[in-house]
Amino acid sequence: MKISVDEIPQSPKEIQFSECVEELNEIYRRSKNRDFVFPRLLEVELVYYRSGSQLFFSGSFSGRFNGCCGRCLENYSFNLNKRFDFVLTPDPSQAGRRAEELHADELGLSYYSTEEIDLTPLIMEQVMLALPTRPLCSEDCRGLCAGCGGNLNTDPCACSGAAGDPRMAIFRTLKVGR
Image (cartoon, rainbow, N blue to C red; front, side, top):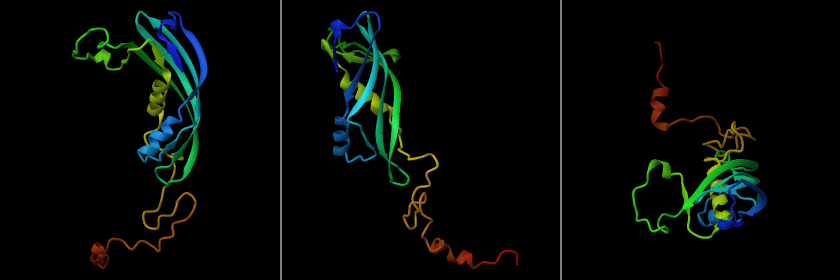
């Protein structure tokens, strides 16, 4: 979705739309990252307004995502509903200002330099920020057995007992308390 900078009012305006984020699947495919599969469309609610030359955006998105659990490697689905806020300010390089040191209050800012704001990359950025750092099918996922590789959530371990480290075999022959 694109919004003309000139059409952004000073009083808040609310819109709802569906945003295509399928491009994120292609980015993940190219990087060989299989942690998440993104829905084709996200439902977005957005409130936007301006104050001087700064543009303020606040909203939320929701969608059904697929993940590959980092412990048991099983695929699972989850809903992601997140709120976001961001501010766009005119690009200082476009305003004739020279490069200068950023101040702490400017580190969270994003810049715009065109007469039209393309919300797609901004919303995709918010989606990426909202994803869990490690995909888990559940908090109590037991993962895979290090010995036999079985999924401990669904099957008992098929290992034939703990053989242990062969370098420690000599210690298993010791008798304690003789």
